Length: 69
Image 1 (cartoon, one colour):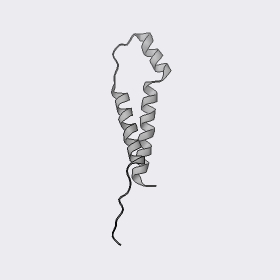
Image 2 (tube, one colour):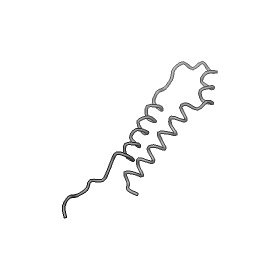
Image 3 (tube, helix red, strand yellow):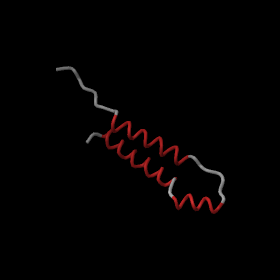
Image 4 (cartoon, one colour):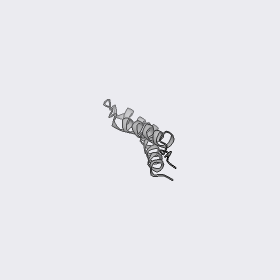
């Protein structure tokens, strides 16, 4: 497996975990009971960026083919 593919898979996993942590029902229930109105958007932003970058690395980055023979 190529290094770019491995990095892409790691980023997809990391992005999924960050988004799942931010949207977990226990965390949302805990914030609602504390009446915590200020939301820190750093985790979902990093999670989304990591997920999109990982998908791009896995599916859209192809090795360059040399036409020299």
